[in-house]
Length: 565
Image (cartoon, rainbow, N blue to C red; front, side, top):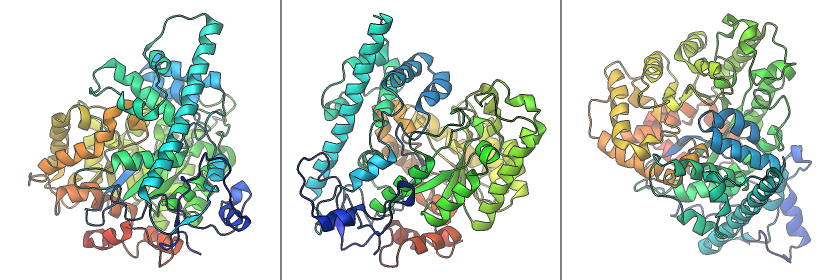
């Protein structure tokens, strides 16, 4: 039985949160199968398709290939959410994010649906839809989204009341005011968001609230929220969403696992990939600290890619390690960090390099791409920001020629910063598979003219220096769910980039081979990911999906000769 049999589509939304569902024993047994060894289940599962494969709301076989190469799908059980708020996000806005962390601490560790709970929801299948009833499917999605919103609203308001009573606190900051005034309806909440751009302080609080609410949702609800908001550009639909898991267990989690273990996160994301007809593909996280502590991180990555349909690896240097060259740091470099006090620091630098080189070697041999955070940001200590610098990536590219690397965010912390992006652009000229992405380029919403000028300058810098110009290597990415921190305007991300690139397409000085926008939105990512016929990643995916059930994006990729080289 195949996962994506087009003759057997079903919806798991239609019967969620409905009482007295009459499911036959045969249907129940069919639904329980194939949920993953990590949850103690095995067998064959029937395929599930919440949308029609050709639903024009999210799909169009005639539009150009569009890949979001940098996104995240998680909830509050998938990461150390309190530590992430207090040690990472609070560096930029202490008042808002410490309040958010205080609320979650009041609610408790297990506030978000776990992978096991999500898989259980996927089992609530009453019948197989042999015809697509889009309105019914969408209504079921709306119902489930409202249920997640109710969980968030009720628990956040209850936690806020408890904190005020215990601490006798009367003052209310912007986030607290928004929580107090949350409407009962999710649709009203969405419509009530500020339409201003990001200069207003209230948008920061609203963005934090958006982020909190998403952490109470099922992951598949967040996927379809993305598709409904981000796959509606003027000329494009998102054919593929590449999501990245993260592993912060050691850098900010004191070595403890998340409420939903990474193993079970792989199980649920694999299921979501199957459910969406291969529209969602995933990167597995690698943490060299975990590799040192337990020797388990690389084997985890290998299993996810070789056996569960994952296509790449995510690493996060600002958590406390350079991509290479850690041996140059003294052991004291890791003092006063978020690492547990008992984590062994003796010769830590050389051991980090050894763990990373083992990863790079395996990825190089197997054609596996790596995406890394390259902004000088989002680390638990300011001194770790420097670990994203291009000089460390230069060591990697020299030692592992041909390694597929995506410099996430293109090293851009603001439009005033050019040193790191230019250094990465120069480095990309010397590597066959060195790329960058536009994840969290929120300026496309707040200062589109400024971003257009910034990217024009970066592309012109390399336009006459061979086929590895930035125009051939920059990829579309959103950094969703993180970009929702910017408020309700974040849903205009794709449309805003479309508008900007329609103008850039007319600039012949940028060094594009063919149409610049086609490269940025799809071709460059397809080459980076190795999706061309005969490339290692594509070969693995061809084995993963049967010949009769290929993801829809494969037809678009196979029509592009530029992807095969």
